[in-house]
Image (cartoon, rainbow, N blue to C red; front, side, top):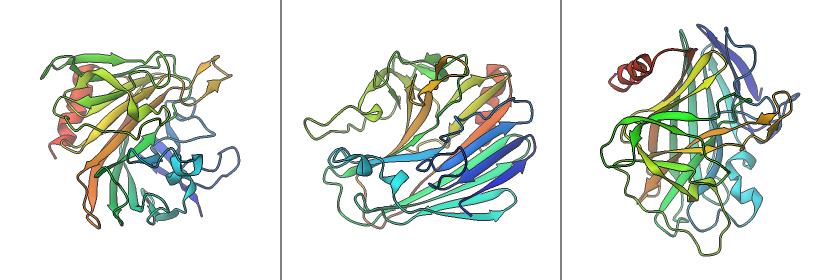
Length: 290
């Protein structure tokens, strides 16, 4: 099977590869559906997905054509149902970027979905010495398109920030206070969310957004090369709610890579009833310090 349904505590997820099925379009891997028992609809746009591995980029070849730009969504990928709460997606080294990856998803009661991502570059094809991976999560018509995180405009600042970009490719990517790695691009390449940077910086590697009467939190273990990315309209137009579907995305940057070396990060999704920012911060601190 190319997908399966998993339940843990209050949440249910459909996880699958790049195959299409019913109303779900081909080319959108990851979490096809995520629901809390208190929600009325899928958190993610049903035709698309969330936690969707969408791009690999290196400043040189990603803009050659659409098949290369969306290579992780086009290249062969294998889905494995490991048990009642766990699934895995494996993609062999891709044709252009030569990056192999494995993503393991684990549901945990009462409202957690853990992600363990590992990748391995197989060839010296990244001429600028770095590569990045990019994930998209297409949110299903929320009234509030923003996501929120602790950070600021000044070094070391940690206040609650709100990001809702005014347009696609407009100051779309947020770096951490300690991220000083500069990406460069081949001259003349077209726009992309990962090329444009916000003046804001984050202090802790997590953000949250509001959906119905729930809060969606996406958090990462510290020191992992993560960058946040936002689009107000990345998921297209939502006819039901007469609005756009925002994209609450992220990137994983691997500077100074070595061939056949494994690179990894861990993330956790929390989908729970609305709560205070104190509780949101406590969710992050408890998990990050495990």
